Image (cartoon, rainbow, N blue to C red):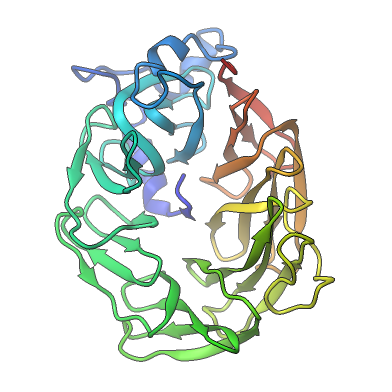
Length: 393
């Protein structure tokens, strides 16, 4: 899933279409939906898909890797990689190839089971493009965004969505055809809008650190709600949903280790809690703390954050991976950041992405040299079951 919040309308849209999934190359065909698992044996390993997936551009001379995952509900979702997209409608019991081609997906965002958006690259190009599908992911069309390169997208339905760059925010109301720039403060390094009016921004103040600001009038006016002292300001990520706002503030990185801090608000940015501040030997002090830090994020030591998933007004998850330690994990909170728990996966990897369609059921993709895989949890990440394993060669 996107680096993104869980929305009720996504679950409704998926339920309405769960019996008529429109994926696969060529003509639309139907699957039997979530009940398929009860009438057939579940697949194992790569589910016989590796040879097909390798037809995608960018994997001809290297092994397959997952890059993102996006689930509409507990049973229906998609996982993408470099040159391929696959899907399931029965909670990973079986998987189907949906797309192979030039697009190397970095983020997937399906507001319903037919219309979807993605950020993607093409082979041998550093540029990231916005692409759209109207048939469940079988075919993709590039949308022109002159002068705009998004790092994250968040669509609320098939027409309305938000796109975030490294220094601003944009809104579309026509399915990504045109975009309007949202008003954000000077020196913005991350932004997120929970609604058209309610938004948040992380601003860099040279010589001081980071300021977190909020607006309730669509960006016309901004007020500072948190100041975080930091000697370095390497960027930030923001996630907002309902009453929840979460901010990842980055320090330096070195020796494959990332220093960063995580802040949470459960009342639309009025009050903030420092959840943890991960200082590392390679990256130095985390923002808002000293060299000793204040706790660690998931996949410690030196874990790099992946993406977050926010559910309702209480629950949040963060994925992470540690290239130095060769492991991945998640962190979670059920109380708006008041308490936090890190959980490591047993299998190796160096980066991960998550999608949580509900408070306890979630999905995770692992990037790994030896065992790129998809996992499912039904207990909030305490235990994980492997649902797909791609070959290492």
